[in-house]
Length: 237
Image (cartoon, rainbow, N blue to C red; front, side, top):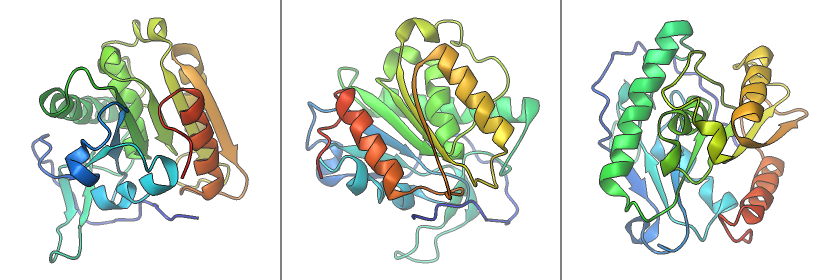
């Protein structure tokens, strides 16, 4: 198992929602321009390197850009540590607070994509937990731009987003997976996300016995098969 749990307890402060740090795959994210680019979005208390490391297990022959969230929980101490960051000012905001935080973060990410990625190139957001929420929220604000979305141990902002009523027409492929032993995201949130995605997207969902708030090789194997079936990645390692 690959531990990507969200255990940071440092006080947070709201930072301007601007993407300032990005880790690219080899070639500055332009080695395989004919294939979709993955947009990697980490979770609470993590960083851009953490989620980028899983790409070798999922789609090693696609390019990626892994974004650092702008809220600093723990700054990097030196060049060998990446620090801890968050997309939201709290680990698990709820209600209107979550709606506002999700919109602010997704808008900043979408603006970065607009400025940095050619409009001709397909983009597939992949996120864990908070990042998983944002991978889906990008579809909820700008469904035309994203080829598909991957949410690992994610959840949803509860309110209505700008493009929710238009999203079903796109039939966007979404991969949503979580551990049955997840103690961070309540089960009712996971079930609610599954039901909403079933109504609004072309959903593939998996849950895993014995898995907590983390990812696993079994999950990666299912994800690789989904990527192959949707012509996003070649499905080989």
